[in-house]
Amino acid sequence: MNKLFLPFVPCFVFIITGISLHAQTAVKKQAFNTVAIVEQEALAPAHNSMADFRNIPIKAVRSFKNTWQHVDNETWYRIPDGYRARFTEDGVLYLVTYNKNGKWLHTMRQYNETKLERYVRAQVKSVYYDYSIILIEEIEYAMKPLTYIIHMEDKASFKNIKICDREMEEITEIYKL
Image (cartoon, rainbow, N blue to C red; front, side, top):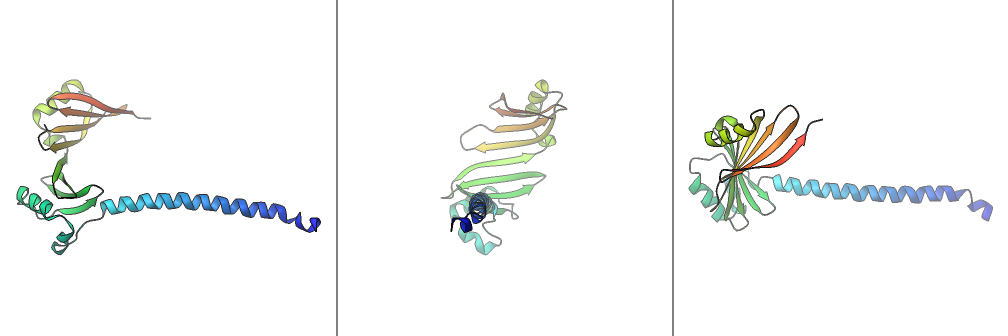
């Protein structure tokens, strides 16, 4: 009996190892897919037509329409902590964020260097004159000064600068390879 069982031992070990590896891979894939699904849900439009505004708190829709009366091409997204309206106007991307109850949290504008306020540009260029400004993110919170995140690059690195209340702070520097 032992002689018959011995040739099957390597096969048995191989099969068990293969099942174990497959199970680990399946768990990793499942975790990855869960993350991907969460990201897709965060980016999935909350509505595709006017009839689907019922999924968004009325307080958020009214606040948005009162503030942005001339905008009618916005797209609403469900995000983990609430809702976000996205639209473009005059080459500026607007992201207006509301909490789950419809209260306005913040507005972010993304644009290029040509739309940056002169005093902010002068402040940045006086220190980082060799850098090219790639993108500006302007963040507006209630009862707080405007915050600018300036994304820049030169031949050797990328830098992110934060300007709030005319104070400049380097946030990140990443060196190119």
